[in-house]
Length: 222
Image 1 (cartoon, rainbow, N blue to C red):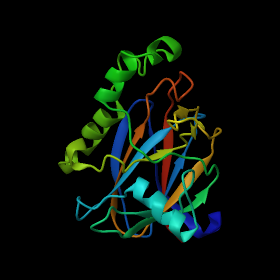
Image 2: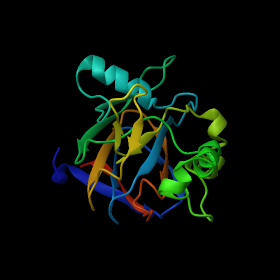
Image 3: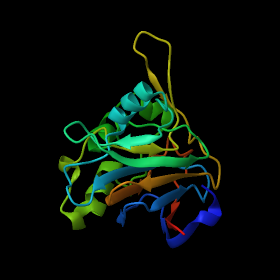
Image 4: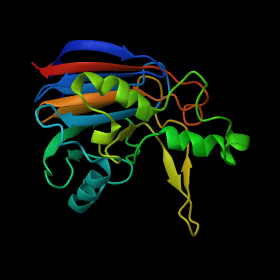
């Protein structure tokens, strides 16, 4: 794919600590860009016509690994959860290839963080005025009649989120800063009509203490 084969049809920004749900048609390409600098975005993909079918990123890690085309840091094919197991989207361009795929912060995560040892070493999870990514999904998906209770808990593409596992008896996870630099991006091509729900993560710890907005562009092949 080259830039000359794509025609941009829409562009918008999801500001820091906010969310938006929108529709991506079959064969269209979504570009997610860290246009303000290093930043994590939590993204979900849901079948427009059957909301029960959703990308299961943790399951996609396993299937990509079996096919030899991806793993814990990068994915090529995004599959829906068992019971469907359809190839919903393809990552056709990824300037970073270092992401995470295992959920989003929630009210419970915030409680555990802010009442545990991480508060002293890393500070609060979120600024007082901000809400969690789980609550952001509730907000942006309300027009579609969906809440977090309807979503796969491990169905999140944690764009530009860098995580290491320590070689200890617990396999402790260390959440580093965003893996991207300013203006780096990922392109997703849809193989069916999908609802995209995306949050510009407000987590202070993983966004270097300064959450930012993210730019999105929708393309069609010319």
